[in-house]
Image (tube, rainbow, N blue to C red):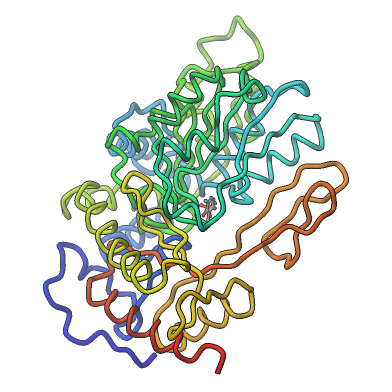
Length: 452
Ligand SMILES: Cc1ncc(COP(=O)(O)O)c(C=O)c1O
């Protein structure tokens, strides 16, 4: 870890609270996990002690720590600009997505639309339904990386979800708010409009790379564009591990439309004359055994921290500002290497690129070994980013589901499909322009050594 952060000029409000990140370490991987500001660690510590002091009371009746979580859910609802009964706290994005996808009443004849860049946490439950039920899955392919950096939102939406008969009347459209592979952010309001034009019943969004990175109160990012939005609070929000949130638009959703697999309260929904004993669905999903409640209390503290530092708008501005510097640097040095979009409405806090030969920047490296080598060398020098594979999803009967770890990927016909690897940089709230400068300098050193 050679590149020590020297004098940190002018920190933004709250940046100095990320004291657990080592001084000589530049952490640019918020897209995998966040750190935590001191106030959240302190709150977590305090509530764990409160819990340990009187556990039964905490779980059964305490107004803050108790199992129904109304206070903490309400604070989260306010943060997202929605209502208490739209919010269920979860452990992570994967949990929220599984609650939804495994809970909706899909039939074998239903069609579900997704893209070839979805994360395993959404692919996995879809794959189960495909295998178990015979659900029809249509996988739409993203344009090639070389085209992505030049495309705009309308063109991308027309490419991914054109108004064609095969997509019409699908039961669900499953997408990511921001793609963990390319850093492409989809404008949810325009996606919703297209889903309506296609008469698609449910818009289900993986918000793992959205919440805490962009301002969820802006029209294009609002969770209420979606029927379901599952997000973590342990990544860009910088909350405790094992925390997340599920937004459910229809607070009154119930069987037979929705049979969620994870709750202790579903028996009450099975008899029509027992409406009084039915909790709002988000609350029924909250009562699922003892969860990491002290951490949900710490999240409420985190939401106050967001307020203190100027709100989501300010956080987004900082994150996207830093990612623009990274993107412009790559675009200028190696246009062929840049994968992430340059169109403002598709930008996010993630920038992906292929490593390139510093002297001949049109020569890019896309293989796993070189890309991991670059990421490892950066880490040796005190800068943490990550590598991302571009997964290819295949739902054909002949082929197994492809996963990240595999080197070679085949399409339905058995033909090999190109799978490439890229470097991904996350610019978190705690990062500074100085961090980006060090990243650029270190990357230059590493790329100069490539192939030697
Ligand atoms: C797009 C996407 N979806 C889902 C996940 C899984 O997130 P979680 O750990 O909150 O389940 C990730 C994690 O990196 C992701 O990038």
